[in-house]
Amino acid sequence: MQKYLPILRSCPFFNGMRDDEILSILHCVQASTTTRPRGSYILRAGDTTEVMGLVLSGSVLILQEDLWGHRNILSKCTAGDFFGEPYAATSGTVLNVNAVAEDDCTLLFLNVKRLLTSCPTVCDHHQKLIRNLVSVLANRLLVFNDKITHVSKRSTREKLLSYLSSESVRQASLSFDIPFDRQQLADYLCVDRAAMSVELSKLQKEGILKTNRRHFELIVGSAS
Image (cartoon, rainbow, N blue to C red; front, side, top):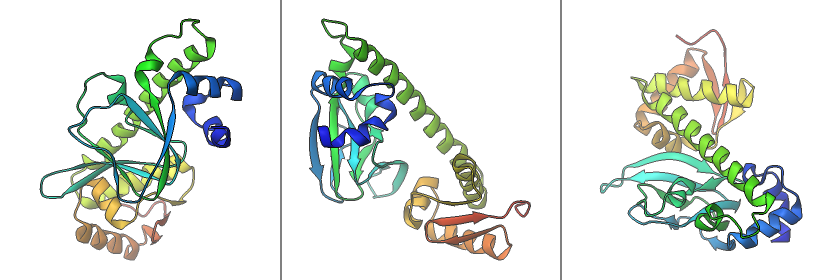
């Protein structure tokens, strides 16, 4: 686990903890690492889980899929991000999402039941970890609230502008990269990809934005 400490130190879940405390808590929660190839399912809708995952390398998509293959991307997790924590923290809860490896990835799994059961010694770093878990769960709610804000807009144009505006504010720049390719962005916003491409072309022609693959530049004062 030593080689993963640089990533773990930067993760909100281990905020305020020393290296020795991180290593101690990993043992406490029966942490284990695994690798998954691109396109493989890590968690499946309909299953239950007692572990939450932390991405150490690569990326993971959290998505919903119906019987006809339509995809709704809820979020994307990269190195240092957690997934599955709301389900692992609620014993017996059936997942309604899939976690899929977008790239070849290395993952760390932590047993949440062990986390929520205090150590016999009631160690201070265990208490820190529980507080950090609450913070991680609260942040997850904020992420989903952002998505609801975007997809609740009436038109594809409004959904695009809502999302891009939010990303601009989050990254504190009018010029920024997004984590999604075009198909993933369409799946995230719950819109048709072709219709979205048409709207992006219109927005560029109207001088509202410039885009190249995952890079966007917003031009303030042009949107209507």
